Length: 433
Image 1 (cartoon, rainbow, N blue to C red):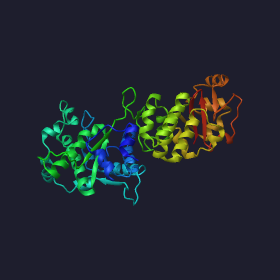
Image 2 (spheres, rainbow, N blue to C red):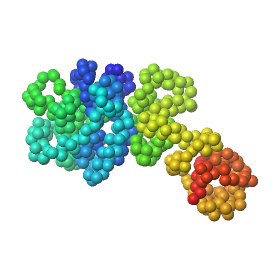
Image 3 (cartoon, rainbow, N blue to C red):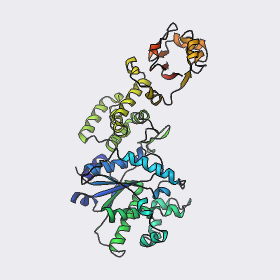
Image 4 (spheres, helix red, strand yellow):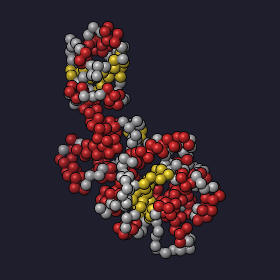
């Protein structure tokens, strides 16, 4: 496939330097994106740029993923109004390993000519002294050039440390090092990275052909993708809990799946193009079906399925679907019995839970005692309240409506220790400990 054309129809192309398209059509080209390990996991904002590497490789080019073990010690000032807190080397190393593992799920690492590669800029910066770096890189770019970058100009009024000011020079040197040592000709990133990326192309030009050479021949190239925003202009990628992470320990497969499932209809045409690998024909057919029956949320389900499988695996997707059925009232008792003990905590994370002992259960004469007394009022404050709710047909056990004469057998307890109590549309989990 043609890489640039693929990005165009998907709406993933913001800016590119002259000659970029010609270079990519001329020969297989190595390109890279950098990821600073400022958190233990990448998030779905990073996923948009990861998809650039995915499409680059699918088009026959060679992707490099750079983990910023060195630049992560400083932090990129782009898009920030304050300086980042410095992380310890131990935290950075732990973050780097997590990011490496996540990137490996999207790119193909094999023995082929366009196999993906991972590099860490700490490997080349650790051997460069401060004075050597100034001589190697600092002499080639003027302060005027660096100050003109948007990431710097926006911070001059509020304050910018020399540490953050130097970030673009470090990133520029990354590109130069990869250009010289790995034959990398292209750097990509989000549109907010244009200034940092072009610093790299300028450093390469000046070091390779000299500051006085103003020929139109470019040796290195730059390409950016638009930042993802919602249709109302607000930032994309956050839920009520904060960032939506790619690490299942930080955002469970269920929460991840639900984030996409609740996307606005107006956002879906862009999201499905940026975040999935579905073809243009498949997407247009899904959009036609969605427009005919918007209430079925066909686009949301297609996005949620595709992205959840690639981030969390087929098993993670199936667990997320099962959790949705359980929590939103569509599950049958047969579905509930298939939930494994270790899945309950994942599915019911964030759902109110109450633990009771065997003695509490034995002391309960009936279902009303269980819901109001054994649970110490955490589900219903009194027996009277529990009876009224049951009489109004508003209470269910394991998704089945009950009456006050209902008796619970040992078989009713899922995995011998869980009961799902439905209070109207809300759920409460009882755990027998």
